[in-house]
Every structure is written in structure tokens, then in C-alpha cells.
Image (cartoon, rainbow, N blue to C red; front, side, top):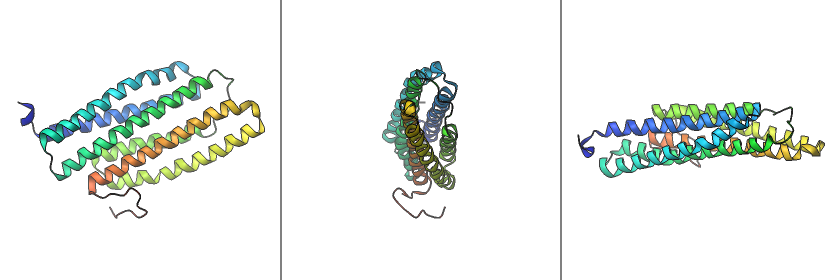
Length: 225
């Protein structure tokens, strides 16, 4: 069957699958980068960096598929919202993966220094951020606006943990100047985690738009869903 005669559902399903694969690889990159931090595993950190090329390639495939659908399929309103959401979501996921790569680079630098005996609550912050991403992807799959809004609310947990870890690291570096270099690397890591949570929030805003046609970005009050 010629490409232009294929049902649009086939391409939309392919697009959904590729986005989920992209998100899954980004989540795995976060998990591996944090495991490399905790276990001081430089080889694993380097693997995260190498695997980023595959994530970039997958994002390109999503972009190409979105263009094909828009040009060849002329999607109706609800399908068009899905494709637009996908166009905006794929770069956000790719940037999430970039933050995981940056965490891995900080891990490599930390591993050249004597080990700090504590990592504060960085693994817990990473766990929250990873769960947000997984929940966001699940909401995307089901077009579940309510779950997307619930996921956004978890961003407050990530922000609170970021502030606490930030304050604790500053106190450590003030009390013991020999920890400044390592503390600074950890500050960068928690900032990357905080930015990942922000990107997940952006993705969930796109899910609400896709599912309900409601734009909630910059709004203090959300619609009842």
C-alpha cells in the first residue's frame, strides 16, 4: 500500500511508540547517571555519554514522522493536537537526556577526587524526577490530562528537595573548604535534576493541551478535568 494511502492511525501509533522509546531511553540515562554517581562507576558514566547519540537519532526520527503526518495525512483537530504535542515533547525529552549526560560528566570529574562519604538526598531527588518522567509518559500514552496535572504537582517535591540539598551543600562547603570542588559538582548535579523536573512539567502541559485543548502554561488556576 502506498504511503499516502495508509490509515493515519498507523502513523500516529508509530509516533506514540517512538516517543515512548525516546522517553524510556531518557529515563534510563538518568538512572544510569545517578547509579554511576553513587557507585563511582566511571565506565557507566561514559556509557551514558556515548548513548546520547542514539537518543538524538531517535528524536530526529520523531521529527521526521511528525512532518510526514502533517504534510501527508492532514490530521483532524484531535489528531493535530497530538502531533503538535509530540513536536514539542520530543525536544523536551531530548533535553532531559542532555541533562543526564551532563550529570554523567560531573560524575567523571567527581570520580577523580576523594569520595565524599555522603550524597545527601540526591538519589531520592533523582527517584522523584524519574517517577515524574515515567508518570508523564504514561499520561501521554493514555491522553490522561488528570494524571498529567497530578505529575506536575510533584514538581513541588523536587523543588523542595533541591532547596534543602542546596543549603546542606553550602553549609558543608562553608565548614570544610576542602569539599568546595566536590560540593560544586554536586550542586551542578542537583540543578540538572531540577531542570529535568521542569521539562517533565512542560511535557505534562502539552498532554493537557493534547487531551483537552486547554492551555495551562502560566495559568495559576487549572481547569477541572
